[in-house]
Amino acid sequence: MTQMELARRGTISPQVKHVAEKEGVDADFIIRGLANGEIIIPANVNHTGLIPCAIGKGLRTKVNANIGTSSDFCDLNTELRKLQTAIEFGADTVMDLSTGGDISAIRRAIVGASTVAIGTVPIYQAGIEAIENRGAIVNMTVDDIFAVIEQHAKDGVDFMTVHCGVTQESLARLKKQSRKTDIVSRGGAFLIGWMVHNDKENPLYQYYDRLLDLALEYDFCLSLGDGLRPGCLADATDRPQIQELIILGELVERAREAGVQAMVEGPGHVPLDQIATNVQLEKSLCHGAPFYVLGPLVTDIGAGYDHITAAIGGAIAAAAGADFLCYVTPTEHLSLPTAEDVKVGVIASRIAAHAADIVKGVKGAKEWDEEMSKARKALDWKSQAKLSLDPELSHQVHSRIPSRGVTCSMCGKYCAMAIVEKYLGVSATRC
Ligand code: SF4
Image (cartoon, rainbow, N blue to C red; front, top):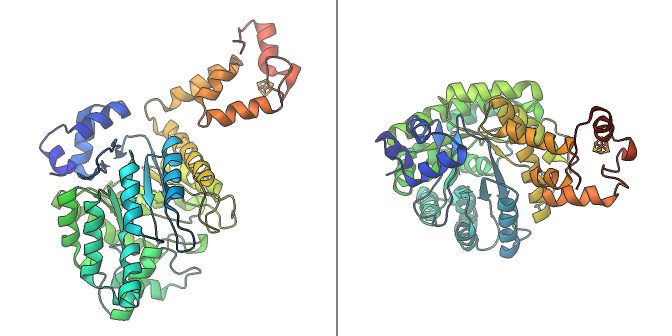
């Protein structure tokens, strides 16, 4: 039985028990959210070694890190190092987006080494194998697609991006819309190429029940992908994007009826003043399904710094109700990330998620900041490092240009904290 089905029977699974303790909420709260679809726990029955996390309403905002090989660079050890870096710096989930080398072997190694939930986009592998075995993506068969999905499920993948909302209907709207960047989703592009060439409906939409059967068997979550997400600010919140979202909302309902866990993916590139609207639209059209946003990036000109443009958008989206942020690294739009880029991306996204959690009233979020403020006031450098997202960096930077006294070298002997202590008698912990 899926976590959703168990919850509907009132069963407190070990996964529910664990996430309730971790979030500091009652198991009943998790059960209610799972039962109505507002909370998901991605936990494939075949992912041994998984420490589950829950995503959704009333819970801490979660962060995903994308890793994976490409056709230009493929090294399993590098990807495993990125996985460990992502976990070490606090990613709640990791997606393996590999498109180079032995994709199945890489996925199995990543799932086997991961304590966090793993997501994939099976259409990548199906498309690449169609090129290798049948000469072109457009020659991919429906069975090819479902065989790859089943293989990912058997291998223990906890959530899968499936672009079921890229239909002939949404494609018709796309054709009428003069977009600046058309389609920026790889999965969406593969499927649209196939649909146009074969003049057929998207198999993931047409045979959605087949997908639901597999999700039921292995309890992987559907991450209903946004193949028509905007790839630039000018294309944000347009008719094709919203058309796809309407379809995804209908598919969320069908998943829930079947007892399958589902979340919805969102943009992309969105101007600041449209982010909250996008969240409200998703929550309304998809009946409160957990919203997983890819950024969103708030400007198109941040190349090299897109972890920042995405963190700005992520904070606004999460504060407005988005539940799950997909990180963006400084190499976005430019190249495959290194392990260091993964670290920077995870931390940027965690800052966004935490900033939102403070205003969402998530248990422990505000208190964490208060602890840091106390340590700052006390000039307690050890505690400040310990409370930061990157303790090692915090310590290194503080030591780089050392202060001659107990303060930091920014203001030295004119430290406001030290002056106030002297005149108002507030005690400081010397480190
Ligand atoms: S020296 Fe300046 S920056 Fe450093 S702790 Fe004191 S007030 Fe803050």
